[in-house]
Image (tube, rainbow, N blue to C red; front, side, top):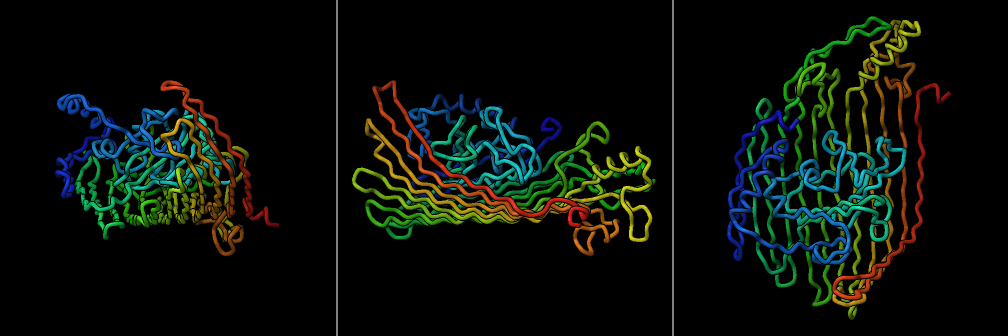
Length: 502
């Protein structure tokens, strides 16, 4: 699809700091044109000459140079992300060689590392994924519902390929993806912004406005504020189509929903982090992030039957999501050891609707094959239009706590030990609705719901973990780690139609 979309854009990117020069103006490319942007970067790099950059990671829960980290880590840093104009999940995931994904609409994707995943059918009642996703210190892994934070003022994105169960626990059997935000800088004023306007050839217009400010408050406190608003223009058309249902003979059209460039996304958010240096040994960093996102339309198309970048839908498709994460990190020195506490709470709400008429068409064909006159009936006893949609009303909340003690990384013998606890709940109500059906057959009294999944899923995890490293020499290090955990899962609720209630 990326080869079919051309892009024109204008962008401004400025940074202000007493100790830094302004960043060069950047040309913003649309998400579908990132490959072309990436191919131009080596030319600019060659013109500047060879450069060596120290890449700092926290893949082992301690700060270290990437070259000195004895595990498989891929890093996408702040500067590189800015060069690539990365702003969301589908942008950055393409530049992480150890990660692959099955895309959907924004906020929906299946992540694979080393070709392994679970939860790959998107069933909220089934197993959790095998790739863990972290936002700073908190795991935010969900089934088929990636928390797609707008990627601005992000320090780096780390991918750890292979089993990471010792330090990162459940849902990290095949790897871990970590999103690390920029933290406040003590004693330094910084500010920056980025404004971009773009248009898609054959599609709609989009724009981005984002900025940050780092404010020192006295000698031992700093506040970092980040804000963003991003609108992605659509490029998929919902074209006119009709269905002639085989059993009932009812004809359904989507005349009222025909629209060009209808897959639009608007994302707005804020992030605030406060860093307080209590003394020479202890720092406290509370933080809160809020984001809301509205989508309209679909992100799939049917080039064989309809045309390139054309789809058909008989009901409106949209989603409305908002979430916030509140976190607290405390770091301190106790003699030669560092003690870290990281706690966070995440609350996420999402309402959605999408067209499910293709399944109704399949059922009508099946009923016609077996000689039935109708798949569904109206209140007057005649055949009902079986066209249907799916609505979703979902809430996630997650609490996590981690306490760890670690020795100095400068020692030949190093260790890290910790305690971890998390509890998460997913309350979801999914309804399959043919609006023309007889309410007497609805699982919702007085409604038109032919099928409902109303469930609450709870997952809790307690763990003790530790890791010891010993350097034999500059070339060889022995690393031994273990994790003991207790995992509990509960699922209760209802899944079925009205016949299951009798």
